[in-house]
Length: 232
Image (cartoon, rainbow, N blue to C red; front, side, top):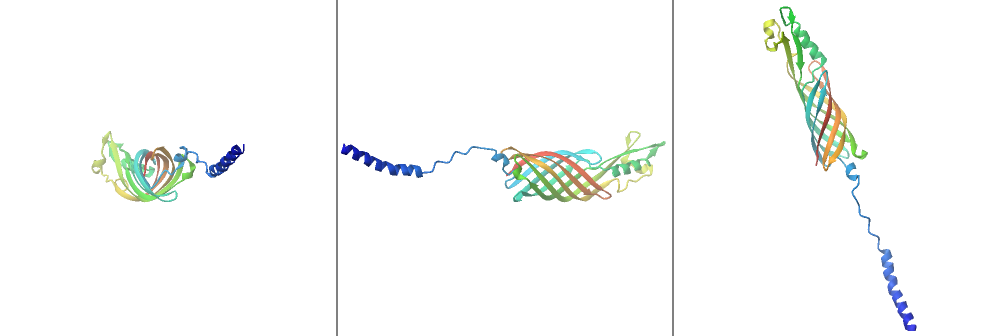
C-alpha cells in the first residue's frame, strides 16, 4: 500500500508542472476570415488612371469623353490631371449672334437660318478628396484648373443650301464673334461617387461644372459623367 501511495504522489508531482505550463500557454488566435474590410479599404493605393463619358450641357446637350489620372499624396488627398473632349458647348448668345447674321443673308426676300456648334478640348490639373471611411460607396469632391481650346463653327442655310462659305456674295463677312478658333482659361469643380468593382477596378459617377472664360462670354458646362478605372 505504501508503494502505491508513493507512486501516486510521484505522478502528481510530475503532472503539476505540465498542467501549469498548459495553463500558461496562450490559446491560438482565431483564424481571420475575409470581411467587408476589402470594400472599405482605400480606392486608390498609390495612383490611378481612368476614363469617363457622358453629356456636356450648356444651351444644348453634346457628348463628352475624358481621361483622368492621379496620385495619392496625403491621407485622402489626390493630385489629379484630366483631359476632356466636349462635342458642343454652344451658348445662347452665340446662337443668337449667328441667327442675327442670317437675317442679312437673303435671296428673293428669304433670309438664311443660322446655327452653330462649339466643340472644345479641356486639360487641367487640381486636387480630389475622397471620403475613404464611408464604406463601399466613397463620395469625393474635385477641383481642377487649366485651359481649353474651342472653335466656333457656324452654319448658315438658305433655301436648303449651306451658304456658310459663300456669305461674301450676299455682302456679309463672318466676324470673330461667330467663327474661328480660340483659347480660354478654365476652372472646373464637382462631386461624385467611387464604387469598388473587382480587385483594383472601380466605377466612377459624378457631376462637374466646367467654366470657360471665352472671348465674349463665360460658358458654364454641366458635365454628367460615368466611367471607371484601375488603381495601382
